[in-house]
Length: 161
Image (cartoon, rainbow, N blue to C red; front, side):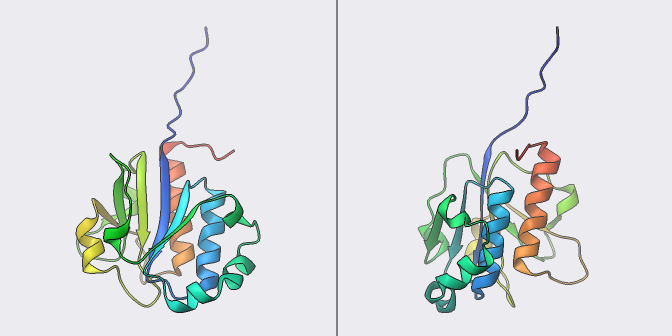
């Protein structure tokens, strides 16, 4: 008799604090859709992002906003976090764990830092873990998000199809 391997499922959401470029958000949303995210979000997005939804849609060629819930919160305290879900900050800090050593929780919310900035102290205080992508300098926020999501599905053995 053939034994079936249990494939972990879980769920995750990914978002950015203080994002300022609509095209970056559109690219992140498209990647999140492709990697099987359950939702995307922003915390305290720049006015430029809020006022230029057309630019978000322009860079999201898969029209992910029609298939993936998008949440917009003013501050981290406003977020509704599911029970047992872990908050993972993605940031370059002294005590951050390198992504290649990180064990992704099955239920996770990933929060990326903004372009030209860092996660706020309030957000870092709320995180259960902080991970960093081991690069010589920071990456584009949409690229960083895609790397984190790829690492998640690869290390957990999650199928996206």
